[in-house]
Length: 458
Image (cartoon, rainbow, N blue to C red):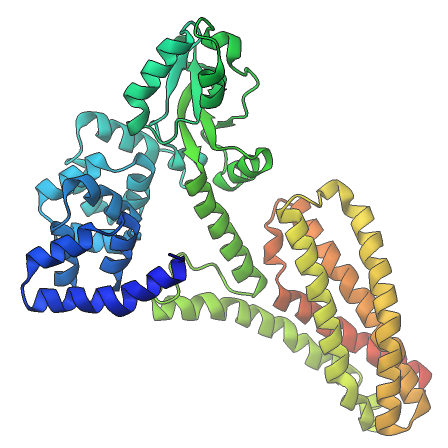
């Protein structure tokens, strides 16, 4: 069944049926219905129920064998709500049975008092793991690691390794890559399950492992680690300390979340919005007001420069009011061109298609593009102005100004993100609205200066 069909069935059929069974207190029928679903579908079902009582009741009916899987598939807000409603015994089972990375994500979202209460419910071993991981910086890859990986040793033979994988595999995050450790847990190699299975029985792990392992330090920024993970097409990324001891691995699902957060943050910055850490409908109203209004205030201050520029050219404007008729199309085209250029460059920097060393090549290319696009649009601008006003010299002013503004906009849109990256500032901060504002002020100055000279309006 396709995903969309399953979601429609959950929303239109199963959710109403579950609500009806709860009202009629037919709990046996309800239990049979929910246990026939996958953990992912049950998580969606719990989320779709409106009453907290119904959510908790449904969750308590789950057998222990799937309750942890369901809990892990809930978002952190739903997990938090359930925790406040479950007994300590239920919470203790869930927390100790959860995947380490999922539990870390939950702990990060909890108030300090609740976190310390839940930490006491962990076994000594799990408590030690939790406190170590949460001790790493918030944006480091250390916050994403799980210690549940398959450890092998170089002098194991093929059969011994397979027996070990069968023994620990179910509790490991992945078995497709196994990590070979030397003295003091130092990472000395990696071997795939495929190579182990296909190797001769008498082969030792050291004979089939790869010693050139892609790995990162535990303090590496998680976004940088995600780029390394993506670049090398890994299944999991090993994370080591300063002495090359393997601390844990980070798997695909965690990096998907990191890349999604990074993309969302960049989109918000490009749109001139300070990043909001919560989903739209869950974020506080006044938090959103502040996040949006901050850049709008900055842009308003910068945009006020346009009135200063226009005031400076008040004499030419008073002599030929028709000059103002073409300001909207002029600054609109310039802002659009600058935003286009900035967006392309910011994306290229994010995907590493463009590097800081390409500065002059990028500027030359964008300037050439701006020149040709500017010439094209200047012809359209000239014709448009002549058809409206029938004034040849005014039309020439509009055309030339249009071409120069487009050239300036594309160049500025390329230069500023590259400069920001060179200064180790996020290029996404060079947002579309900011580029547009800069181009507006510059474009107006170019337009009126050309008009003043060509039309002799001083």
